[in-house]
Structure formats: structure tokens, C-alpha cells
Image (cartoon, rainbow, N blue to C red; front, side, top):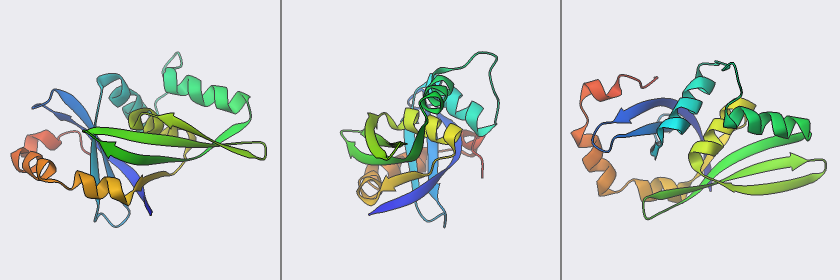
Length: 151
């Protein structure tokens, strides 16, 4: 089963020197933090703030390419978590055919925000992430760590 999630914000994890995109479900009962790189965090941030750079970034190009090919992003699904690596698929519609493309979750999320496509997460990923590691990470957070998190 899959759960629809929404990007609630971005934050910086000073312990790992990485950015985190935080996904939440509609009822705020489930949370999924995904560690991502700085370029992907920047791209997601620009999309969240509806800022268009003077030249297209990679995810803007991807959207323009899909638009030019008359393809539509149906949805993004974060499908698995294995050895601390997330996996995702982008579901596309072109003509009468559906296609599925493997993707890093950060790229899939950046594209979903630009195309207004829904983001889903397999429940198994949420359960895997609900491990002791997440609990320990959450315990170590300070209020200042949430400076960039949108609520």
C-alpha cells in the first residue's frame, strides 16, 4: 500500500553535513526524512518557493523536455529503502501509454514539485525508516536544527 506525502520542508543535518527533505502525510501522523545533496536541496527549495532561475536548472530542463514531448508526470513513488539508500520511480503518461522511470527520490521530488504531481511512499519504506536510527537522530536534534523547516 502507498501513502500520499507532502514536502513539509528542508533542513540541514549538521551531524552528517547533509540536507534533509521532510515528507509528511496529510494527517501529520507519518514523517519520512530523506537525506539529500546540496544541489538537490537547492532545486527543491526553489520549487517550493516558486522561484524561477534565470537559466533552467536540471529539473526545470526535465520538466520542459517532458512538456515538449507531451508527456505528463502522473506521480512519484518512493519505493524502497535498502542499506540507507532510498529508491524511487517516476510514473509518466505519454499518449495512451504509461512508463515508469527509476530515479533518486530527491530528483523525483524536485520534478514532482515542478509538475504538481503527487508524491507517494510505500508503507514498507515508512516502517523501515521507523527504526532505532531515526529515533536516535530525532533525540539529538536541537530546536535550532529546525530553522529551515516549514510547518
